[in-house]
Image (cartoon, rainbow, N blue to C red; front, top):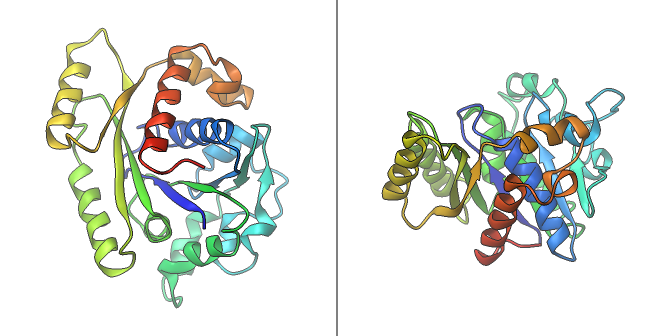
Length: 257
């Protein structure tokens, strides 16, 4: 049975997609099993990164949620070794409206993932920057949640709300759901603020916060424009070393492929 990690934070611009893609690539390269990245964000940034956009796609995760396609039907391969992609499209934005009165609307993704559980050793879900139906579907389907937090002012704003949502989903819909960890991203070692944010987050979440910290990095920013993860684009960069460390911590916490 696949282990499932949801990468979630209702705040935008905190590095969710960067984390989902690079963590997926590192875990796929580090293990012998296959990893599936599920793009649940209507902005489809992971899809644009790994596939060059959603143009030409006949089906996406939208079709899976509304019951018009199986997950196996939408999965495409990527150039990253042993990393597959369930692509998103902008139509996902309408799924929350279309499914508002649908039966089992919160369970659609979990049911879809169960049909491919034998094909992948690990599933990573890239969530949208919201706490709506798409993110709830991801949390219901997941075993654990990884929360990227930007090293900037008000970093903890909304994190408490997300933790409450995780607790509510655990109580009502998914008893196995746990907080895998909080990942500090976009760290700028030149500023005192970044260091203060790290200290504050670790004070509130001492056991859950990853030791690895992802820096601000030009190479990390460049990699998507080449359609590559940072491990393929520049494995010697600071950003690559940071995500290698994150992958090692995820494996130690029991979520390797």
